[in-house]
Length: 351
Ligand code: SF4
Image (cartoon, rainbow, N blue to C red):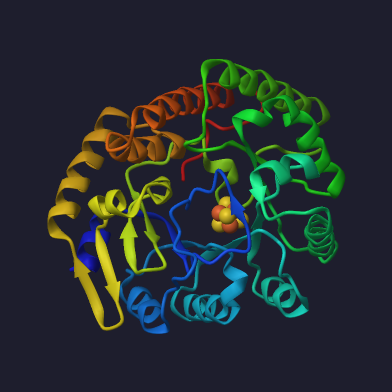
């Protein structure tokens, strides 16, 4: 049944949030209602991977929490994916604190790209990525340098909190100084955006894109798994976002909502011994999704994500609704800018 449903709706990305345990507590964390104690079981991982349809290519992201906290499970997931799907793009999202030799060797040998979350200079990280100190920041930086030197495909996401827009360029060039090549600059989701902070973000973002075009040396949008894809037309389809409790959502933005709201969008529940399908949610969601793509056939991944967040935001308070409206407007402007600037070649692709 799951295979039948998935066969009718193209799967864009499989996100496996293997654990919600994390050594940090970022105030803009997309997974902000984490229990900090839940992880997928091996049996749930087996159930999930055996139910996935064979496709031309699988895009698999393993994330958390901090996935390296449950490294044996991460390796188990990837090894099963390699066995099942001959064609796949694999990546791992990490805050870069725990990296050791065996982790580096594994990602290198298996061509797994790494997406670190690092927001630039120490003060910006310290203000919002709670748990980072001067000493731990040095560890992050050292680990990043080691991965870059060893030739790991590493594409950071620099999250910009509205309070940090004035430091956006300083933070970006700090990441360049650290040796990064592809950098995804992304506004924090469900953070207190207003028209002024959004205006400043766009102003600086345009300057960074202009710098990128002028130098033709480094790219602000990644060549990695999803970075450069955010503003492309994605075509009809959806994500599968596996939460550490086995409940499956259709897009990552929904992770940012409290559990009772996330439950309204839970398509499947992966258990140790099988999958429970939430028929009512699946049918209702797919109807809305189809309608969205009919009205927006060239929708980008950003717009698809906003469509999902828009379904859930109405259950939140007025502040969150206002922040989301400003965020949505901001990301729409980003798509417009990226599609308009000649040379960025964003109009040609399709996810
Ligand atoms: S490192 Fe990632 S998962 Fe951990 S608190 Fe920060 S944003 Fe959330």
